[in-house]
Length: 217
Image (cartoon, rainbow, N blue to C red; front, side, top):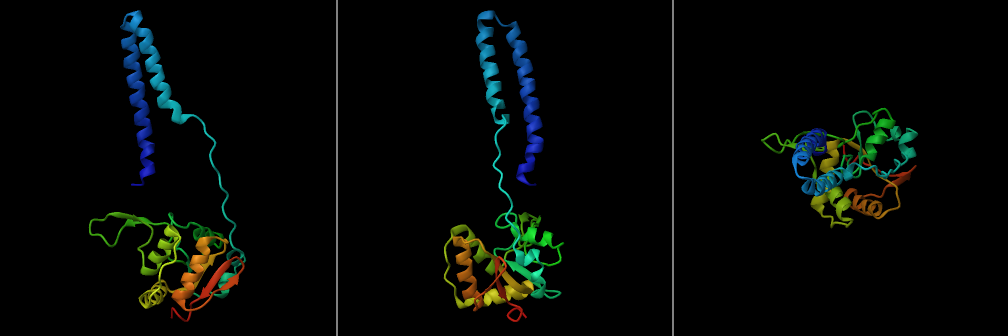
């Protein structure tokens, strides 16, 4: 169960309890002597006001979506991704770390496949059916997420390079893509992937592209 959806049940119940409490309290106040009823009314309506403060209208912060890189919007990606192969965004598309790649795919009518994405279902690593967000992680995707969270460059070993090749083959990768944003994370991904994949990327209309078709074959 997604935690935020509990509000759909909790709020009506809380409102009902508040209304019932207020009805009984006001009935009791009407029967109380005047010298007690006045301060009780002030206290009761004060508590109601405090309870309702969170419902006061507030200005919502709105951020526009990032523009879709022209590499995808123009269809240039088609020259790199043959049938049966995938686009690997860094980090992998998810509802937590990066939703943008899902917008790229939606813009192209879901014509290309990619690992990751929005997923809510049983965790295959557990025997209890415990739920998980996102797809099962791989060694390389874990490394990308660490960079995303810590903004630090990890030390790359031969084992990491071997794991990266295995992951690319598992994902049936054609290209690895890092969107350009001129930020610290982009620079770290550039350095990390260059070390992991053993080659430098090319800049193609808004994204860094590592062509890994031979590496992942």
